[in-house]
Image (cartoon, rainbow, N blue to C red):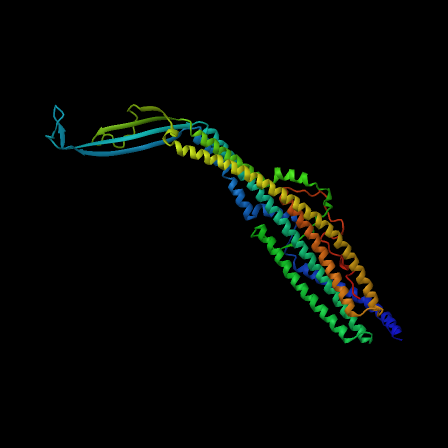
Length: 496
């Protein structure tokens, strides 16, 4: 009789259950439409849009870009300081002087008192040009080479900052997509728990269920509602982190566009090839190489101090010098120009031999240390690349397990619901199946985004993209890895 009553209850509830799930799905779709209507004033932000915004507004990248603006002026200054002579111009100098002489000398050169002591006044006006050019050994070439290496380091830093900003933005964008996918999953789970609650209440009204089952169903709804609220806050925080990384203070409210996750089989990636690529593309390796070049310039500069210094000086002046105020503010060019040309040859190394030797040894030590630092950086990058590739392969294997686990959990839940409708399973046992399915769905989404995160770590270590051009997620029609709902054209998340 009991089995017959269960069968009758199942037959009686079948039409109501069929109507309950679409009704719940329609209610969810209406809620989503209302949310979409309320957010029509926001913009849709694609990943490409986010990358472009970050390139124009990310503070860290903009600082690196600003530093490269020094390359041109500093190179021009280096050329002018070492090729052209340094010039100083006296445009106009005028003065008025008064002298009072109380002592004089006699015919034999002995000092005597001046017979007549009167003030003597003079005025002068002067213009002049002074040109100085100096060179010591290969100082010209060393200065230009140093400036070229400095400019190259700034360019490497700018490229590294751009790569870092792009990877960080893509990481945060993908993380926000993952949090949105989890939010949708939590909403679908809440819809399913509410349908389960309705069905449990109907079974209780038909005397085939218990009050405990009803209370447990209500508890499951409240717990799922709490999980949904927590996930909504996590999603909002992910959007906030993305907005901060973009750096655009004028960016309006935005919604995320759907983006295919770059998921592919990484077994085709070769570790040695990636390491070789990283040696020529990783910003840290390139910066270490530039540091060696700078240290090598320092050694050349220290050896150049042994060479004599050649200095040439040319002075051209025009001076008007008259008594009283006759030459005051005299801007005429009646006086001939005074010209003086001098050449000096000095030996600075002889003045401070031991300090010069000490600077040479210090420059040599710095060069050796820079080479060791470059070698250490290459070893570090090789370790990072190989470790990141191992993590990526491990995430790929884990993703395969999670996808299979998700399929098993979904099938188990379907069978468990059928058994519960026929009385072969208690509600408490069904709740555990609910939890297993929910955990499997969350873990699958998390595993997909963990794979993307591992891929970005590998590309950061290499210094460029290593993914195939068509690296799309092969395991889901939804690029975010969310099971389709009835509103998306698939099956509803399902009640009992």
